[in-house]
Length: 192
Image 1: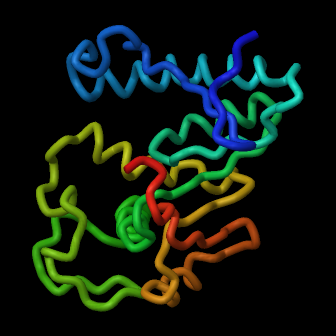
Image 2: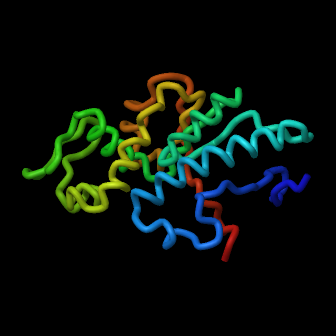
Image 3: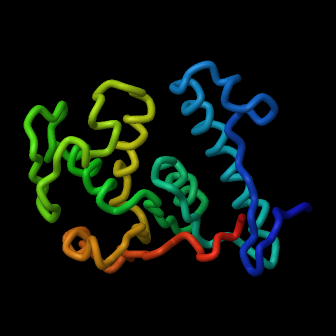
């Protein structure tokens, strides 16, 4: 059995997006690509969990980017823990969270925008998907869906610069399963 490559004690392996030979262009549209990514990704992630089960390195937790929220379903169906790793800056995720939960309505017509835990925001301070509602609808849906099952995760990992986002982090830590991670990019970078 061939396992993925390793960086120290971390083993890396890949899942399929359903377009392994031709890549994204073969998907035709963003919607079709994301549908195939979910179908093929779910299948190949489940296969990886099974593949590693009989090795000295069984998978006991799937750490996933919540854009791919279906990875949690695969982890839970496979009997392993799931950790949602929000890699975008915490404040960006918090804005999308407010939209997904109906606490901030689109389109935003008046500025500044008031969101609890944040300073007043001008239009230029908002994520680009908010500035042009309706652009890239499949990806906007993916951004909002990242919160669809976080109530079922074992851990929530948040990318933050704690000194700048302390109040916001404290508002979001609703249980002991939320962990704030600062400076997630290594210095110096692994890849020059």
